Length: 151
Image (cartoon, rainbow, N blue to C red; front, side, top):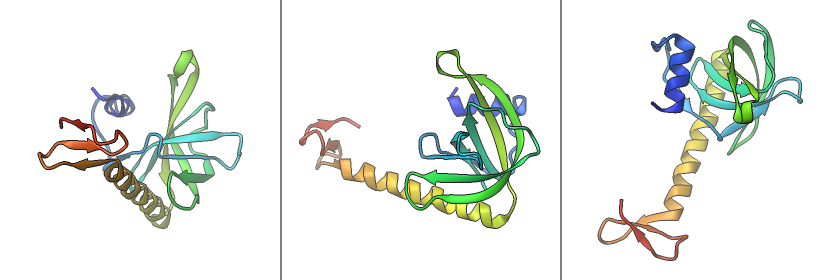
């Protein structure tokens, strides 16, 4: 079972309850709350909100001004509400918190999803830049100076 899938099942008691499909963003978008000392890592995002990981517990119901920095494009500043928080074990036994965050306006959701799409397009360009198909249909790693690898 994929890590994101087990996290979703843990959040929902085993059944998926989401209204909107999620886009996994691990390592693609970071940020912080209105308190710059509380850094976050965005795990996934949908039209309804996003899941994030932080080392600080954030109380449910509180609205924060988030500054989200995608791998590509301008940072996004938006208010959003913490709707759930769960404690988990991080690397080396450290305490981590996974929180579900709800967008407050459709405009915030649209801005965030546009940033996600820009990141996805950039990832596709980077992948195409490093790999090309040779005449036999095998991938050739440009960075590997023409060495072919089987698909």
